[in-house]
Image 1 (tube, each protein chain N blue to C red):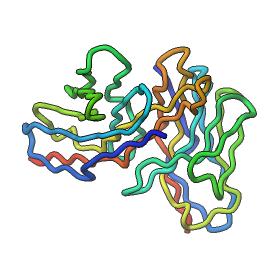
Image 2: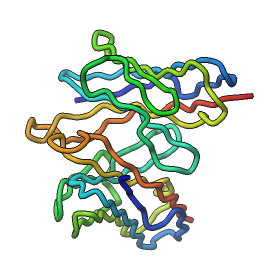
Image 3: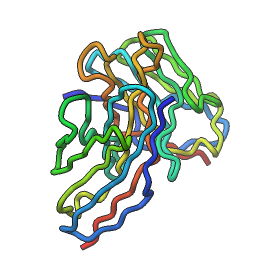
Image 4: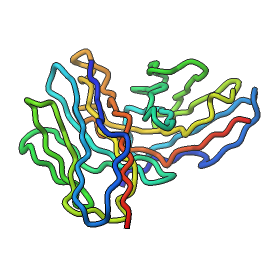
Length: 118
Length: 116
């Protein structure tokens, strides 16, 4: 079964500083990986996804993530954050398709709250 | 743009009342999901559905039921609310891996339910 660990529950940073939000997953099969962002009192919005191909994935709002199969990690990075990046970020991994005995669910980590201070 | 809408943004109910939370998506997605979100616990899957009339239990189905009479609509039912069901409820939809964006889930804005 898949699982996702987000290593930091809260990350405070100053505006214009770089940030890395860490995500490790466990899975015995090839997976798809996602990062979602949730702004206060809103639903989740897709930030980026890794399906295949280049291990460096670029997303919206200047975020990028690197898929590392050997370390089973998918860390999210941004070189310079803004106040408006304050939000909660969720890493997720896909389950197998139903025709392969899976459920097509996404398994989410518990989230990392990013707070950008002036 | 994919749109997932939820019937209410905020609800306040008394213990023991019945609650219907409705979710509608406009992208003809087969899969639909209900989650609850609580601080420190992330998203927990309550129920999901692959098609009309189908439902599958998620990780925390106790105290909840669902209904999917039409492909675009997935309802979460709390038969008799209790205070421990105070939470944010999120609905999502997705296509199966053979079509569209595999696995990507599109979320509604959420319903914040308070049970007093």
